[in-house]
Length: 327
Image (tube, rainbow, N blue to C red; front, side, top):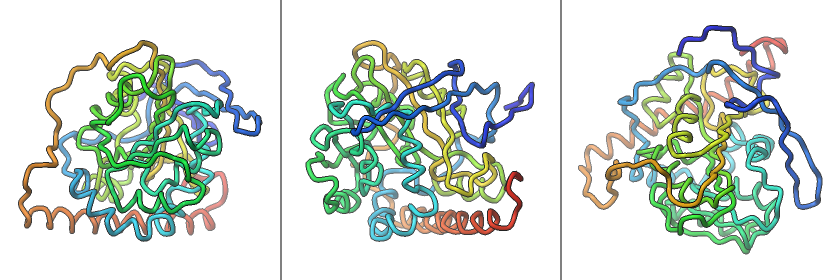
């Protein structure tokens, strides 16, 4: 996407969206308020990506088996490099979880890492965690801090909830595996109450050619423009995008981040999304070619290993490159 003017990242992070600069309050259970800045961007810094690009661990069946094995080490190997507690709390700030009686759904909640951030602000009895992986949610059920949270299996693109059910919709690290991200965001719109807010946290598309290659082979890394477009088409208003990153992140999308932005939108009217879509892109009931599945799974897993090494490499660069310089 061409830019007519130079874009300057404010301290590496910020909100991107159609709103003017302003303030947004957030309160935790203890009544402590913090403030989040909103920043307007005239262009995006993530690179374009062909919609037809093949991704080997993007569909539900590959993701199911991928997490069958990854669930064993997810909290201890993946999270420390890509999805820390500080990042989680920063990414949840735009969700405006200021009322402990809000009904909140965490879609694609996995082991409950993001849910642990939600229950800092909302009573456990009002929170629902949904994920398609029984192995991931079994890990969530074992966490004492999530006792009282409703934990269930389900499909992000076909949510088992009535229209206008939740005050807040949250999804972190799930869109990467959605065969049809627009459908998932349309479902987010449907289940949120009028005046409610959806918050989707996900990866960003890298600009460095090698990182872009592995990202596009592995799973969905949307551009910032795509996130905003999907939310807007689904019917959300006041759509904003906030960049997030680990401590070594300096505001550059060179290598991409498995958790790189937090996008929010407000539902103004009751009912389903005005967007009309055809059949789902993937029918999980259809049989698969075993050899093709094993090939996709193997290649996708190899590509995923690259993104285990990226945070190690970036941490080393952060220690070596002088502060204030992009890495």
